[in-house]
Amino acid sequence: MYLYIVRHGYPIYGPVEQLTDVGHRQARALVKRMVRSGITKIYSSPLRRAIETAQPTADALGLPIGIEPWCSENLAWSRFTRDLGNGHRTWIWNIEDIGSFVRGSNRDAGDRWYEIDAMEPIVNGRDGYAALQKESDEFLARQGYVREGNEYRIADPNDERIAVFCHQGFGLTWLSHLLRIPPNIFWAEFDVTHTGVTLLEFRNRKCGTTVPRCLFLSDMSHLVEDEYADARYQTHIQL
Image 1 (cartoon, rainbow, N blue to C red):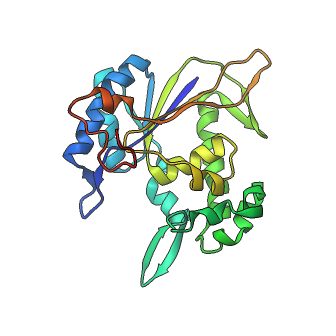
Image 2: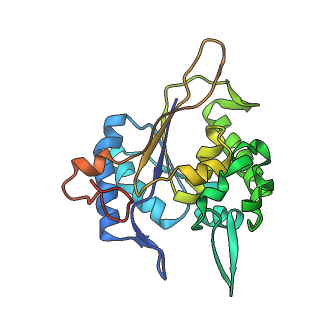
């Protein structure tokens, strides 16, 4: 099985959440790539910006979009933000001194990442991460891969190519779990761009177990190929 994790296109966040014209162009630029990849199932966060990004691909392939509420950025926001005061919040990793996440012994905190000083302001980190892990495991079990410890038992080996259209905050945290990298490290050292495509392979090994392997992270080649989609827009990359 191949799992494609796709961040939505560039949006307007409010007052009416939707993709911008650039975001729609980015979503259309994904179509050729997704068709060429042979996507067999499409899932999306329930939020409009994710669904609008998934829709052109779904239309081209004639596939339904399965809505996965656990992929919502609103849910991730309730779990992995910190209080700025005056009624404002921001992501726990949205700080100037991001190095504090991995400084000294913090990098070696492992499964006790939530105990490091840099995590003190987090709203619901430990319980929120545990909930996301459970939701992820339930989703992958439905696809035929049952998590047992740090690996997955191959209950139903298949060659499905599954695309999940979701978000930055949720996606980074989910990838942390899937790749077994503590979230403080993943949040500090990785990021995903608008319509960036991440691919994980769940190889059907004869031993009956597997672990997801990242083949690429937040790839933007579809934007480079498409003259109508600006790959530089609202990213940290100058192409």
